[in-house]
Length: 216
Image (cartoon, rainbow, N blue to C red):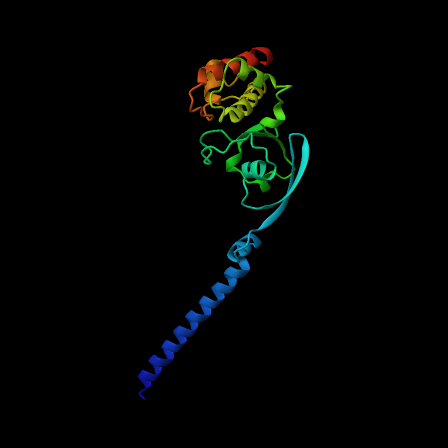
């Protein structure tokens, strides 16, 4: 065997061995770097996490798949089906709930992100025998037709009036240095994330305006 051939053969073995070592090291490194959630998913089992938050004034504790949305936790685990699953993309507002005083799309947030929070759903605003003023106004002004979007509309409307009273501006606010005033433009801008496919917008606006006249 010539010296040049022996050198080439040894060089190939060296390169092959180096590549194998690097690949093995990367595989081991990736396995160690995986989070417990990633390892659980790779093993084909869900990763569960304990979470607790207050829902409509009552403390609730869960052990949930970490991928569970707040919407599914409310509907599937607590059976609070007033909160609706509409588009499941955060575009229709049917799943709106109030978390620590702020309205959110519950389909776009994970339940485990709200440990310790206070959640209010449509069931927590009022009952048929003791309705929230906003619920009563929606009934009075026929602010619903099929009713599917109504829970999200009402939760959002309640939060909208709180936003205005707190002086939080919107894209429709003309003067950021002046107190925020209730107006039709403010109302429509703030409620624009809540879609009513029945087209009851004028009745919804009348209901919210009536409540605003007593509160704002």
